[in-house]
Length: 469
Ligand code: TRP
Ligand code: ZN
Image 1: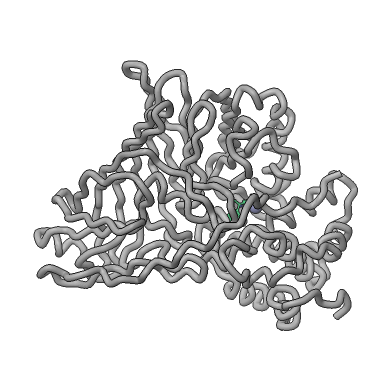
Image 2: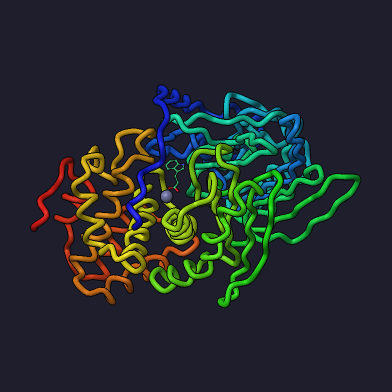
């Protein structure tokens, strides 16, 4: 019998990172326009992301030497200016920047902590006017680091027994490429990773080429659908890989550490069935490809719904597979506008587990709800307003988030109408971003009900509401 999944394991508390000082970008040096903002004022990570531009495409060329723990990268970032820019910022943690160009001309780079300031020369100022698209190339190298989260888990670039894996939720992707690392700025990606034979490099999207020259193999992965940077991944190591196509035409690529292969076989064989079951409930699968990356037990400690291809820290059980695949709709296609909207990811992914258990394990959804309701851990804080960054992966975001979804189902009181509501949600915000307010407005508009009391009690209330009413 499947039980609701506990929130991400937490190993230790560390002090909150100091908020970045929101310094102005500096003098414009004769260039017209103003510097882009140094952060997007996320409620939990105010310095994360950058203002003044919108990335449309990342081209990443990464040369990885796993034995030395070294990476050399070239990031080609195509972005549209949302204001007349004199300078702008990129987020990058660790690593050394060797050079930057904007529109092919050398640009000045200044480094302050995790912020790079790029100041293009006057010769290209016209190319950074509001509405125009410009290209920035950053060359960098070094030993990418793991970042310890506020909740004590590690993200960023994690070294494994035979390679590395990049995990980016919520802020880890800045450990391996410069960019606009906030979930509100989604973009297409073209990621090329070169690794020594016989290692494999797996990433998001579709594998479009693989070429070996002088003992090093370049893998090129293309993600055409918009992706938030926290969902980008690279996994380097010895992997057993498999490719196939589902009856619906979704391309599958799985990469499994040989030590995890036998124990993963049965559960990974269920991916097509889980995708079909999910699509029947949540709407069409939003991407061209799917799959999984299964690490050796101990190489990482938690699963992540990296786009197309979730990473598992060892052979998953079916409930965890269902959870991570549900995120492809809830989180990856419909992405939180800020980190406060995290419950829209975890609440729906947890609810997907409840639905699966009802259909496959004879556990009625109401029973999963009742169990979550009785669990004191779910009542520590309201899911739509976690007290601090370290709480984003806590039980209320998962279990109480799922309870909110179930209370909506009870309010709608018709299963066909409820699932149509869910499918309409993933359709309306497909490949976009949505906030809790967007969700509330959508549900009230579609159902024609004023659900103010539901939101007050279940989404924002400080304590456990009575079941009646
Ligand atoms: N999203 C992951 C899952 O539920 C868990 C997770 C990984 C997470 N990193 C996080 C949750 C950071 C909150 C914050 O599958
Ligand atoms: Zn999740």
